[in-house]
Amino acid sequence: MLVELGLVEQRHAAVLEVLNEGVAVTEVARRHGVTRQTVHRWLRQYAARGLGGLVDQSPKPDSCPHQMRPEVEALIVELRLEKPSRGPRTLLFELEARGVVPLPGRSSVYRCLVRHGLIEPEARRRKKADYRRWERARAMELWQMDVVGGVMLADGWRASIVSGIDDHSRFVISAHVVRRATARPVCDALAKAMRAYGVPEQVLTDNGKVFTGRFGPGNSEVLFDRICRENGIKHILTAPRSPTTTGKVERWHKTLRREFLDGKVFDSVEHAQAQVDAWVRTYNFDRRHQGIGDVVPWERFRLAGEDHATEPVHRPDVSAETSTTRKVGRGGKISFASELYKVGVWLAGETVDLAVDAGLVQISHRGVLVATHVQRHRPAKESTALRRKTKRELGERPRQPTTGQTVTRKVDSSGGVSFAGTNYKAGKKNRGRQVQVAIVDDTVEISAGGQIIRVHPIKHDRSREHGAFANAGGRPSRSNAA
Image 1 (cartoon, one colour):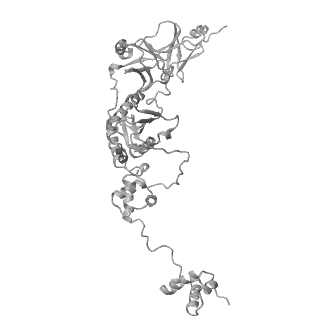
Image 2 (spheres, one colour):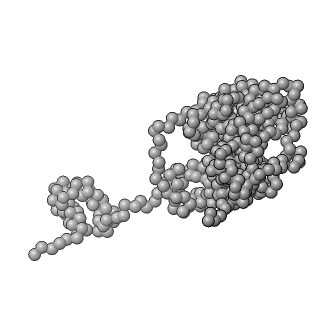
Image 3 (cartoon, one colour):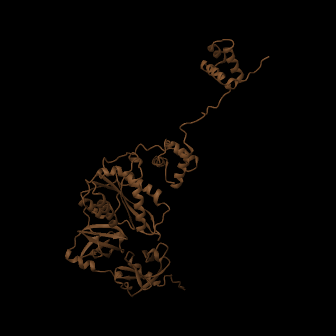
């Protein structure tokens, strides 16, 4: 009769064969289908704990000397809750600053955050092989500059920050809050940075109109380019649609939004500037940067020394006495001091701001620089032209419509009116409104409420005007021919 022995009984039998019967360990191992090392282990366990030693034990160790202490884990959770933007690496710096010994590993901190639900576990992303990482060899060799928005003010306005970062050290050289990021505030930010830290050898920017006239009309020099030229700075532009070229300042924008701007509303531009300055001081002098070997940016930037501490060349701000306004003509040009300056046909009929400074005529529309020209007018005529005010500035009544034969039309949903089979723009703000259309010389004059709102050159067939004027009320007449 066969009897099935349990696992512990088989091991006990093997041990007794060796101890009581003197059978060789190799023979017992061959007979039971195990290695001789296993038989020796059974002998040691039987000698130490008797029959209970032959029972399978859990492989879990009795203790783990390198396991994170509960006090350290509680501190990690506390630091994370205090500032949710802190990641595993930043938390390690905080633990080191607080004298925690031994320091846990970065992956241990990450697992701690996952255990407590303070971070979402995600698969590691492989770095793209086609990205080429580069860095200048020393501080003050290259600055990267850009503009970032998203600074919410209490009045509902979104201000911007003119940002700049040193390529080698990641030291923030500019974080200038402006209400509108037009040419003058951007250049003021550059001059402010140069007065504080010196003149760099090169500046890298994208192709924004405040930085370059590369894609503007006439390919003229803008104020930012001129300041760079006068200070001996080489201005480098990125290729179109290449945001990774200025990747360092773009990455700083991401940190700025995530750790500082998100969810904040400031009372004013001045209040926002004070808060930004405090955050930047921490970033430059206290916070360690992963991209430069886990040191603070100041440790690298200070090595530049006093070599660049020179007074930059910067033009003073344009005052009200050197600026005026002009209305763009149908050909896309404005007249100033008996000279014509091109602005662009797309701005025809719009009012633009004109400023004269150091031999340059700068033209802006709604705070955006649209054209820069070398001064062509005679200086003797400049003061008179600057003092000339537009009718809007003088408070004069707008030009009244010409009296004569008119026809009433209703502005459609696209902001246009139909006259003599041709569509003429009246403006989207006048949609659904009754307007009067008249022919004055070689123009079509559109008016409403006794004021002219648009004047267009005639585009329709003049032979069709009689039929258009036959329906003065804007509706076709219904007469019985019978």
